[in-house]
Image 1 (cartoon, rainbow, N blue to C red):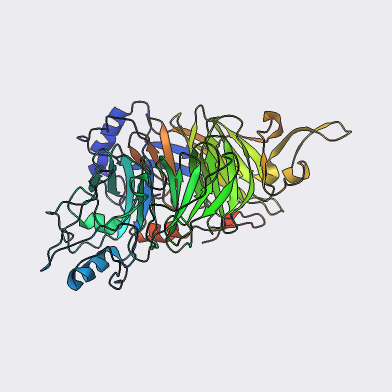
Image 2 (tube, rainbow, N blue to C red):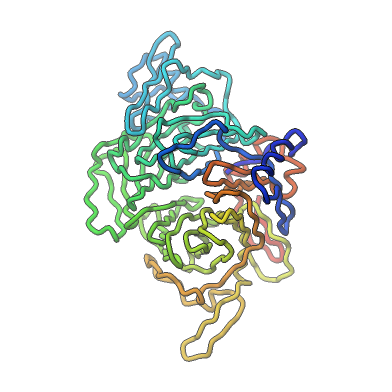
Length: 547
């Protein structure tokens, strides 16, 4: 989810690299792939003085946050929760945007003064202190690319275009634990960063405003599911709805996810019906036009991760029960899904063209699911522990081929709790189809398009049982490299780099071949390519990605 810097790893950064090697014995600062060498460019982490939250270990998640130019001034807010003078109301609109979410923190005062009202709840006092002014860095517009990550009871923000290892901002939550977050680069009102907690609470803030403020508390927050009034189970995953005009999804450990619209007020009693059968999928809508507007009951047990297809047509979920489920989001319909070989599924990711879904979990496998065939089409074997992150690489350009047919090769990457980063290539026309016995015939073992050997596509709405190991084509990794000492918690792919994070809060930025020696001109190039991923296109003899 981030970008490389404009400078190469120079002698000035050598001490940091030396320290890295000293702290990470046996780890190389580069690894080779068929395309060239990936090089460790930067590291980001929390300050050395930071003490981990003592009451429970949390897993660090990382979000890429590319900030654009300042949004245009929004009209003054009309929410009844904002009781301020017209002058301060205009200032609040400039910083907070015109949207009125649930329980917005109000700014009161006169003559140019400003003060944040603290929120008292199980999440603690999140507002900034009265001595903190929004104009702490009045000329700072915040444009650039940032990394947002959680460690213990704090959120840290690092400048991805800086060699500094320490973050530029720390937001403390007074013993409340943030567990997941999401950033919307196209937010029209400036409220672009979602932060969800173990208590079920969710906050929506302006990242730019947090960077402008000099304090260590959250400022200008909109509060959803306050004190767990709608659902008090742990938040497990959060995502903006693509092209959703401010809609977002919050998944919980009780098997439900909720749909919110950030410009609607919250309700302390959404009046959702009681779930009669915990094993069945169901959707319920709120009786009133307030947040949350809908509840999706997905499964019995925790939802571990959610992911939208690029165009927002489909949403995939994986859970504690080991099932991948793919839904038509608009029509609220189950399309397909199936079970892991064994154990829970922990992560999922879409190909840019929406044709395939990757999953990873406790069976140490990377599964490739075909949406067209509505079944698993390949397993990646190579990890020695749970798979914690998967992603298709939409920036990778396959090598030229002499073949005469249209083949699209997919490159994807996985991160595991075995500390390894694995690269995979999926070329469906070259996949080896396992031993299969046709009805009334003899066993066959052949290569070629797997669709000619497998049964027809599964019916819509069917959840497949765990397949037999002998029935699924196997993939081997192209590259395997140990990138951290601690288990990996996830990865992010950009045009210029691959970002890996471990569960204890160390983030590493690996520059792609060619970028470590010749950096791009500024972070704008990353901003443009990160927000608009390139679609796949198949060409005869030249497998490329469109710009």
